[in-house]
Length: 181
Image (tube, rainbow, N blue to C red):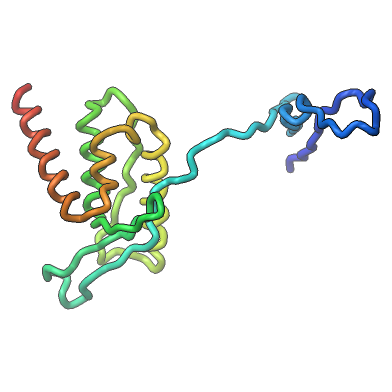
């Protein structure tokens, strides 16, 4: 059982009590947290961009008897920068594969969570899958080179027809690049 003790550093109170000035240096210093007698860590606020794209919900068209039909598509409703759009789940895997091809093993790419076949889905699987896809998008968005890449901007295109056009053009470009090698 760990004992957490928060100690805040304060300066000597030699200021006049009638002064309304706030000590700026004491504001900037984070409190020290002591977790054990030998280990001292300090907390600090790490700024990050809180406007991640996130999956609001996953919808499935089709049912048990029409799994083979054309309408059987698993779609995610994604919200990013106050705009909602839909992507099929297979395009998350497309994004991951294109990032791996784009990098060629030189830079890090977040792992894509494994998917289960529909017949093996336990109860509550779609909620878990939504959390996994949100984590994947958050990790992609945190890495600067991915956020700046063309593949990621193609994936976040809000218009579905424009997305299909850009995706197909990108696939053709990748094939041409690999044929040229």
